[in-house]
Length: 383
Image 1: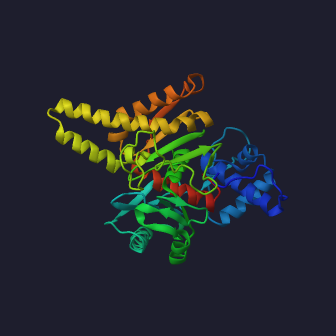
Image 2: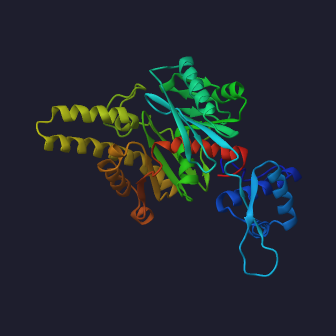
Image 3: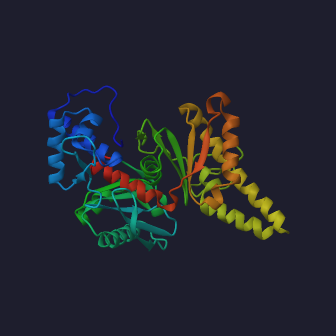
């Protein structure tokens, strides 16, 4: 799901690639369906029974698949033996580096459930000091695992390339930080690093039931977006797809952004900016009613700005679902209402009449779970 596939392949498919594809197909079927017999798998995948049996023997030898007893059947003959992914044989370690004041880590099951979690205060650390905080957190989380670790997934702010190099993460003071390679060398474990918003959209796809094209907007210390088209996360030619936080919205200047420009989406919408604006407006209000109106105006304007930047994307890609990830007390209300109204007013009603915007149901664990999807995809080929 995560790797791009060429539209015009230029090399032949080798036998070992065919076997790997068949292996992935069996694992994916079991991961999503569970409790399948060998005959069920043959029917579901279109593979021969001999191929399925051979693959199952291999996967059982690696402790990735287990037998779970026989199916209760009224038909004559020997009951079929049911199989499943060995869901307790391995665990996944995930880190979320997108927080403004703290870094979060967790041990997750293969099904994406958080089994234990840890935190480290960022305390303003930047550059190598920030890396040391990440390494400290990773060591803590690894120590809490109670089964062999399948791999480590990390969601980082900023622009992250396919080799897990953080090209630019201003909030952490990183430029060309080889995060994936450094942590892989330090732990001896497979490590995958991805942008935090891209991790979030993968979590929505794998664990949030989103099996169609969607755009996820993650609002935190910064603002970013993850885009899923045809079941594939879109990273962009220079790995900066979804970096909408520093796009200037409108021609009326707007608040000054940390990047030096005025009117960037992040200056309107980031959690620190919204929180500060609401605090100031509330302090200056003469009555509670005035304070409530002022807060509503601030959130509405932020939602309007978000709608302005998303409208061309929605129109160009004919998207019908947008997911918001961030503090619901800020996003779920006047802000989301203004976003939808702006989108509908700036796109063709006949094409976006069914457009929906919703909050993610995965809460603050969404990046951790999405980073786990990266590990599942890289190590097992499932998602």
